[in-house]
Image (tube, rainbow, N blue to C red):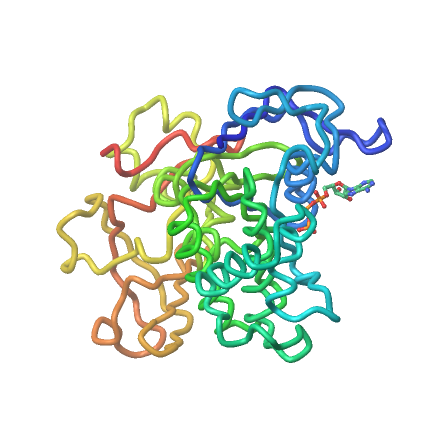
Length: 354
Ligand SMILES: Nc1ncnc2c1ncn2[C@@H]1O[C@H](COP(=O)(O)OP(=O)(O)OP(=O)(O)O)[C@@H](O)[C@H]1O
């Protein structure tokens, strides 16, 4: 079931508008992430989808149906929260089957369905255990199975992995992806973690200040950010930002005059700063900077480079490319991961266009 927002705004207590004129379609059968910093309006958007909140203005559709006035129960959404919210006095199987019991499905049938769901989320060997006897990851699996038990129109996940340790987070995001693909249920996943969003999503909606900054698939968001906010929020290390004026002379031959006039900020991804000899597909600019520091973390090299008083983070160099500290490093830029923004913080030039 796809979800459509038509000019939706929300003001808490009718005065504090936190979502402004949202228009989007969350496509059916896909996993879409709502991504943005704390307070940008992710949970509010999710609660509008679930029916826990009603919009102040605008309309919400599930497929063709206008559900704006319908409550959470009528919308038949499945919800999973970060704190699992399992019933502690019920076993795993009883927890999973609880929505089926509410629907008065007979015991044999509901246990059969419950066991199938337990297999789907890989907790079939824990059926008689209580939530307190499970790990965080297992509890979250049970919460997902319970949400799926009512065959929801849409599955909503609100920061479901934030209580798990780093390794388990990675494991569980793969699991959620697998379960979503296997069931084909339309899923909306809230996170503030760009890495998580990049790995798990078919589509990402980037929100800031209650407004959509960009809505696209992860690679489009990474390679073609619409604005400075999206370019900075997505990617690790954070994209380098320097005043365009510093490299204006170097860029003038390769960008149109109209762009040159409006260029304010130059954005360069750390991996797009590469040795000249290495790269066939480079921008044809030849630059240099002074090495400030070099740090190696496993297979990654992080070089801090001083370019005319601006510090750039560089990950496009290998150990063999670096000599002594304080050395002058010559480099060029790849044809992707380099953008120019104007004074309105919109991306007006992308090196892929060269
Ligand atoms: N019940 C409420 N009453 C008034 N304002 C609220 C209420 N809930 C949230 N807000 C405000 O609405 C804005 C959006 O909050 P929301 O919880 O949707 O953000 P979020 O992106 O989910 O943040 P987080 O990642 O911190 O959960 C914030 O400015 C918040 O202070």
